[in-house]
Length: 302
Image 1: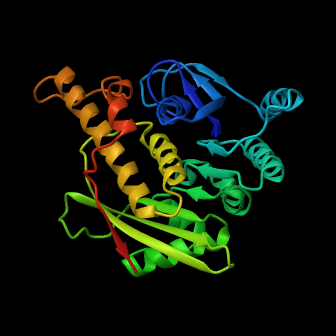
Image 2: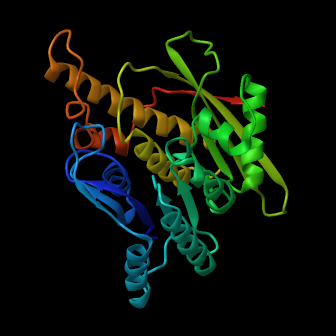
């Protein structure tokens, strides 16, 4: 069966962020991707200069209406990224609700960006976006922001993930946290939780923990790639969060390592790589995206 994703994210002419970070990896893994570009910029905003246009809520509605008029609006997945406009975000939620009515098994994956949006959007994220989401990928700060609860222990992280489940999503991955790693201070701790409803109506939850090596560089587009890969690998391993996380984090590791090696090569000895040099090496990582060597292991926690 063909699997089709509607991806509503930013677009850049040069580099990888938003749809540019998500579309190619999803296509490599066999998904058809229909992209709506929420912004079209020359490059990401970490460069010294950028130019471009921002799609309005009305323009988003027009594009969606065109898809509907041709009766080609059946989707298995929706993936969305960064948005800083209330009306645009509310239009996205309206579209997702309509698509879910047409296909109740549709899965909506949200690349979390609550930490980067204006404060007036926080209630929209908490009360409208998260309740319709099935997969969310907040960092610790975003998870705390959405639940109003601090995380200082693994137990508290589990409680926060349970609170997020109660808000709507069945799959929650806290991509990074300040919790101490058992492997030392060169590692970050990531945690995941997946709630499964069984045919008899009973529920079970699988929770995992991962220790992820820190990298001394600032990348752009990694969150969008992560959300896309988690969507893909939870599709291939629907009730096995451990394997889905191992695949997802391993892809991230391979792409980041290839990128950082290339960036240092370009920058030269003792020089810090620039934003253009740190653009993700996506095309060069095609084989790793398709079939990643598992270099990141997840531990099941209670």
